[in-house]
Amino acid sequence: MTQSYDPGTEGAKMSFDDAMSYGDYLSLDTILSAQHPKSDAHDEMLFIIQHQTSELWMRLMLHELDAARRSIAADALQPAFKMLARVARIMEQLNSAWDVLRTMTPSDYTRFRAALGASSGFQSWQYRLIEFAAGNRNAAMLKPHAHRSDITALLVAELARPSLYDEALRAAHRAGLSVPDEVLNRDVGAPWTPHDGVEAAWRQVYADPETYWTLYDLAEKLVDFEDYFRRWRFNHVTTVERVIGLKRGTGGTGGVPYLRRMLEVELFPELWRLRTAL
Ligand code: HEM
Image (cartoon, rainbow, N blue to C red; front, side, top):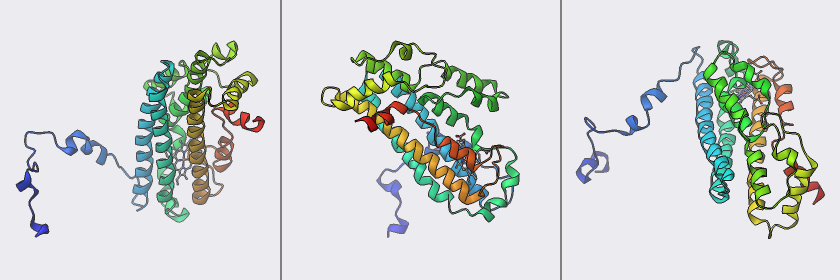
């Protein structure tokens, strides 16, 4: 009978007295003991796990983005495409995850919201690192991390590196596009300012994809990433409005109006603008 079948008889390892098990390898003791609800509200566990799993996926995104950026800097564009495609899929995974959170009603959330104090995703340093790495560099966002010198150091170090977009433009320049010098030599820690010369360079690629196929592929991978990122922001603000209406956020911003404003963030503006002129 299947119910009483012992997989040990076909060789499944059934004893881990002196070997690394699944739980050991994945540090499951640590991960599964890291949920500490601050109230006895049933839905707080959902809220915690939704955030924790998002942070785990963000950890992988940072791993992939970092490697993709290094590949682009080394003109190894094909491996970078594979990693950027994975990043977009991770974003899509995070987008689907909102469906689970949306099962939480405003009444459910109200039961534990006060227990969150001032904590908010606004203080997610991995999210800020992703934004900084992609190219959305707003030094004001360092402030909520001033109490953690280790995290501040990570964010400051990121601002000192060329962003993914900076590296993409440098690679495009090496591959024959004429990217303006002031863009190639810009202060990489400063926010991006859209540049007509950059738009003209990308337009050259889109006007003749066959000649610039690799750069065309690079540009579309970046657009994919931003497309999925925008969807994440939109799903977030819609979920937030559904759950807290127009109340202020626990992080202290105006809430939905602040998040709507963030919908206007553009990571790779020239890649969107050139489409109008094509
Ligand atoms: C019911 C669920 C949620 C509510 C009501 C909510 C609410 C908010 C609000 C109001 C803000 C604006 C900052 C503030 O004043 O607090 C915010 C920011 C943020 N939240 Fe959420 N959130 C929810 C779920 C999530 C989840 C699951 C994540 C995943 C990690 C997340 C990540 C973020 C991030 C990264 C920001 C900063 C966005 C930016 O500055 O552009 N949130 N959230």
